[in-house]
Length: 527
Image 1: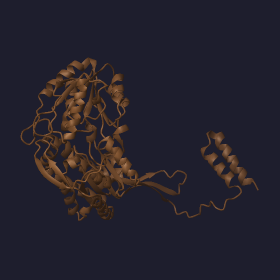
Image 2: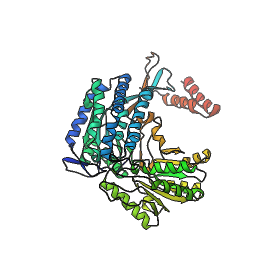
Image 3: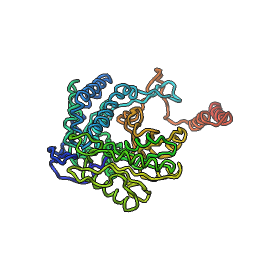
Image 4: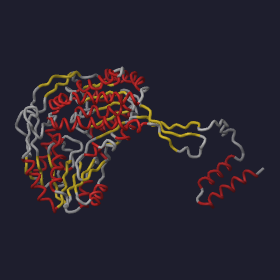
C-alpha cells in the first residue's frame, strides 16, 4: 500500500533513526542507519545465498512459507501490539489489515505458486520438430522499498513472492516504522534457519534517501517500490543509472460511486471502511465519494450519524475505531487539504480539525459539498477524511472519477449489476470492486497495481509471482533432426525461394497462396 516516504528524494546524513509512538508521542528508541556501502554488501551477500536458494524445490519453498505462517499465527498478538505501537493503528486494523492479508498471501502462494511458475508450453509454430516453452527463472536479488502505513504487510507481502520465485531480498524499511522491523525480520530468518538456508538471503536495511538509492542502483535485479508518485519518479531516475527494472505502486485517488439505487446501509458502511480504515492511510482509500442526487441526502445523513460515533485515541490504552496518523508531515498535508476545501465551500459535518492531544491525530471527518476545484479532490489525502460530492448522473460520476492523474482502484455501489459493471468498466483503474470496498486486494489470485500516476507492474496473483522472474523463452529439440539450416553461402535463387515460401504461408486466401506456390514452382523448374 502506498505512503509518502523519503526513499530516494533527498540526501540525508543522519546516523540514527529516532523512533516514537504516533499515538502518544512517546519515544520507542532508535535504529542505526544502513550506509550505502553496507547496502551493497547486503546485496552481494544475498546474491551468494540466492545461488543455493535458487536450487531448492518448490516443496522446500512451501515449507519455508508454512513455517512463516505458523510463526505469525503463534505470535499474532505480539505482532499486532508492535504494529500498534510503531504505526499508531488500532489493534483490529493490525489484525485484519496486516495479519490477515499476509496469511492469505501465504495460503495462496503455498497452494498455487508452483502452478504459476511451472514451465509453460507454447506452440512452436513453423518448427514442429522443436519444443517451445516459457520458463520462469529467478532474477537474483529483489530490492523492496517499503512505505510506513502497513509495517508488517509491506515487508512480508512482496518478500513472499520474491522468495517463492527463487530470489533473495534486500528490504529498505520506512524510517517512520523502523522500530518494529527487526522483529518482523525474525519471521523470515527463523524460517530460513529451520530449513538450513543462509539468513543472508533476506536482509532489512534502514535509512533515508541514500539508503533507498543504494537499494535501487546498488546491484539489485528488480526493485519493488511502494510510495508516493514524486518518490516513484525519483526511483525511476535512480534505476536508469543501472537499467534496473522497477515495479511501482504509487497510491491513488480512488472514487467510490454511490448510485441512487444502492442499498443505503451497504453504501454507508462501505464509505466508512473506505475512509477510516488505517485512519485513511491506505492506497485503496475511497478518497472521493461521488453520490447520486436521489440518495445524496439520505446517504449524507447516515454516514454523518455513523461517523459521529467513532472514537479515537491511543489504541493500547482503550478500544477505539480510528487510530493515529503515522507521521506529523502527513498530518500537516491532511490539515492543509481540509482547510483549502473549507475555504472553497466544503462543509465539515463531522471533524475537520486536528485533535489537540499528544500524538498525531486528525479527527474522523465528513466533508460535504466538495467540488472539482478543490485540491482535496485531486491530491492524495491519505487521512481519515470522507470527501462527498453530489453527481447528477452515471456519466458525470464517471467523468469526475476519471478527472485525476491516478488510476489505482474504484468502488461502485448499485443493485443493478449491469449498471454497476458499466460504470466500473468506464472508470480508468487497475481494479474495480462492485458492492464492496477493497476486497480485490484480498483475492490473491487477482493482480494488484494501477495505471497512470498510480504506477505500473503488478503484485499478487500469478502476475505478481512471475514479475519476480526472468521469463525465459526456450526452444529445444522435439525430434533428433540434425540437418543443418543452411543460410550461407547465398544461392542465386534463394531470394525468390524465400519470397515464394512467405507468400504461400501468409497470402490472403487461395489466390494469394497460389501466387506463392507459382513462385516456388518457378524456382524449382528454373535452370
